[in-house]
Length: 460
Image 1 (cartoon, rainbow, N blue to C red):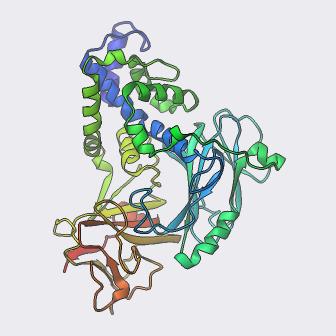
Image 2: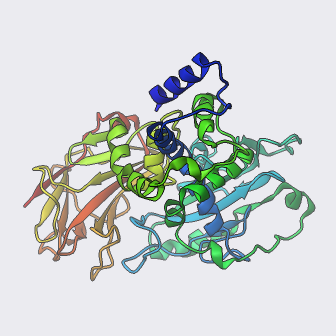
Image 3: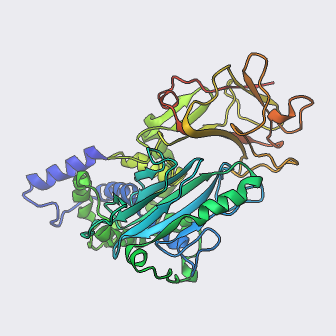
C-alpha cells in the first residue's frame, strides 16, 4: 500500500499537479486505489454500523442502549446463544456507544474485587485506553471522555480520556464466577453510570433514544454488503467528524484522487462498466489476501495461534487493522488479553469430536497472568458456537475444580462422552469438528513473547 501511495504522489508532483487536482488514472490504477481506500476505511464504516445497530432502541434493553448510555448483558452464553460467534463464558459485557460531537461523556467505574475493565475504542477501532488495568484496577473512578472539539474544563475528581474521533465503542468486561455469581454482577452493573457531562452536572434523567427498523441487522453484514457508492459516501461523511491520524496524510492524499476524503464526492462512474463484478471479486478475495499480508503479526505457540501486537493499536498497519475488523472486531490489545486458537492437534490433524484428545499443561506451566488476570479454554463447533452437552459445561478455566496430576501437571480431556475418571477435567467437544480458544486476560510478558509454552494437544 505504501509503495502505491508513493508512486501516485510522485506522478502527481512530476506532472506539476497537486494531489487534489484531476488525475487521469487507468482502470487498474483506479481499482488499486479503490481497494486500498476500502481496506483503510472499512473499520471506520464497521464502527458506524455497529453504533447504529447497538443504539437502535428507545431505552437500555437486551444489550442495546441509546447513544451515550450503557447497556448490560444479564446472563452467560450457552449452546442456545446465537447473537455473536465464539462467545466467551467468562465475563458479562457492558457496552457504551458514544458520540462526543456535542458533549463530553462521564463514565463511573465502581470499586470491585475482581477483573473489571472498560476498553475504550475510537472510530478507527484503535484502543485509546483500557480503564481498570492499572493502579485503578479495584478503585472507584470517574472518567471524562472528550472528543476533538472539547474546549471545556475537566471537573475536579474526573480523569480525562481524550479521543481524536467523535464516535466509538466502549466494551466493559466483568469477570463472572458462574451462574450463582450473577446477582453479584447485577449489583456491580447497577453502580456503573454513563451520561453526558451536561446531564451529570444537572442531575436530569437520561433521554429516550430512537428505534428505526432500517437500523436493525448484523453490523458486519450491513457494512460488507454496501455497494461502492454507498460505502464511500459513508466514508466521506464520517471523515468530517472522525479524522484520520496525522500520520495517515499520505494515504489520504492518494485516495483523494478517486474522491475519497472528508466532504469529497465519490463518482462511481470512474469504476468502469464492469464495476459490480470487480467489486464482488475484490470483497471475495479480501480476507485471504489480508491474512497473507498481515500474517507476520500472527504468533504461533505449539498448536495455538493468536493475533499479536500491534493488535488494537494498529498505527499504519492498515491491512492488519482491516483483518481484525473482519475477524475479531473489538479485540483487546495483547497486553490486556490474548485469544489463542487451536484447530489442529500437535500432529497437524484437524480436531474432530469422533476422536479423544488430551490438552496437557506441564507442572507450573498454567497460563501466567498478572494480578486479577485469569484464563479459560472454551470449545466451539465448526459453526463457531458453543457445543451442547448434558453438563452445560463450555469451558475449563482457572476457577474450575479440575484435578492436577501427581506431578502438578494438568490434563484437560477433550472428547464427546464423559470419561470414567477425572470427570471434572472433561471439556465436552461433541461428535463433529471443533476448535479451541484459550483466553488469557492480563497475560504476563512470557505469553506475548512466546517464552511461555502453550500446552500440548495430542490425540489419545
